Length: 307
Image 1 (cartoon, rainbow, N blue to C red):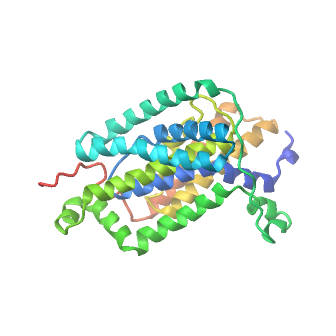
Image 2 (tube, helix red, strand yellow; image 1 turned 90 degrees about the vertical axis):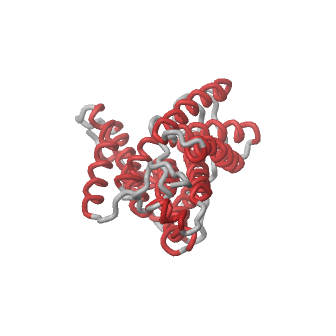
């Protein structure tokens, strides 16, 4: 077993790439769940974003336009979930699962002509001065735009939830929608906006997989990333910075196990392959057990204006 082939700087740079799609999806889902809505359709929205972003990028040779279209279409796709659960009062769990199945089927249909094709990729964004720092420059400051955007988005969501009036309203709706309604807040409107935001970020996460992490189209290429994002939100106790931490743990262990396989580790491949999921869950369970913040009290509960 040759560990000399594992480059720590490259490992950290790679983990940021691996974690970004999950981070984008998870931070959006955290906002959705903070509003009291449980959307299990993250995987479906991610795969729709992946195929839409890929198709647009291939046909326009503009990856950024692919990301924009992926966010828009996945946001629109999430409106279906919002209408069914917030206006027609359908079961949130069943509707979310249905959304995932529809997304997987739709992506397979749309992506069939593009199977195996390569996509244009985002270029690394060199940050003046910082990119030239030995070791750290290539490790932290020579990534594509979406990696920096994902970290900025976490910061923005944290600030929004903690320091803005709109964030306070969203949290109030998630904790007690009846009380929020009695105070005059538009519960359904708040939740619909949160659902659309979650759909858009899931679309960005899916597009990052097909345009950056694995720049080609393969059916089902999200490979459960949406479910990992859902788990990270729960075990991170719905806190933005813990979501970032959880996504990076998963990305780091994923990249490490691939490097160990390449180095010829004597550990069975099956154990290495399951390690990112297991370690991420164990670490986040330990972290969440020390906190005092539970799930939003109205999470998954339908809202009836007459109640």
